[in-house]
Length: 227
Image 1 (spheres, rainbow, N blue to C red):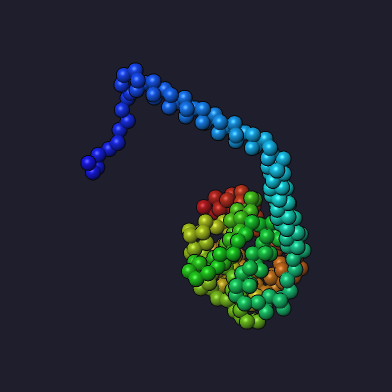
Image 2 (cartoon, rainbow, N blue to C red):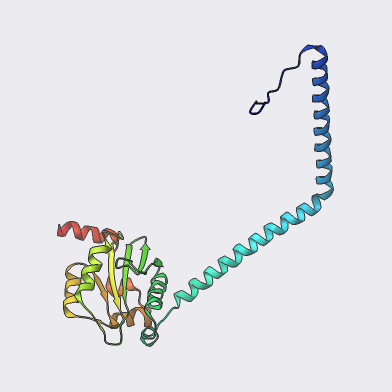
C-alpha cells in the first residue's frame, strides 16, 4: 500500500533468531575484513601519505613566511614614505585618500581608506592605542584652492556621533579660509593645510607631532576641566 512505512520486526522463534545471529556475524566479519584491508593499504601507502603531508605543511609554512616577509617589506617601505607636494597635487581624489591612509600607517596608526559616496565626511579612519580613533576628511583641491567653514561643520557633526572619533582632521593640499581655521580650533576639528601637509608628507614629521595631538587620557582630562 502506498505511504505505508517500513518497520523492522523483531525475530520470532528460534529459527529466526538463529538466522539473525548468522547475518549479524557475517556483517561483523565483513566489517573486520574491510578494516583490516584499509589498515594494510594505509601501512603500504604511509610513506607516500607522509610525504604528501610533509609537502602540504612545507607549502603552508612557505606561504606564511612569504606573506610575513611581504608585510615587513611594506612596513619598511611605509616607514620611509615621503610624498612631495608636487606628487600630491598630481593625484586624483581617491589617490589622495590612499596616500593619507599610508601616511597614517607610516606614523604608527592602524588605518583604512573608507571614502566613497555617502561616507558621511570620513575618507580615512585610523586607530592608535594611545590616541584613540582618528577620522580624516580629505579635500584635494587645485593649487591654492580654499576649504571653507562648512566642511568643518560637516566633519564636526559626524566624526564623533557617526564614526566614534576621538580626533577629527580635515586635510587639504590647498588652504583653509580664516573662518574655517578659527571654527575648527574653537570646536576641536584639526586642520592640515598645504604648509602642514609639507611637514607631514614631505619632511616625514608624524601627524601627531605636526598637530600636537595629546594622548586619549590627557584629552579626556582637558574635556572634564572644560566641562
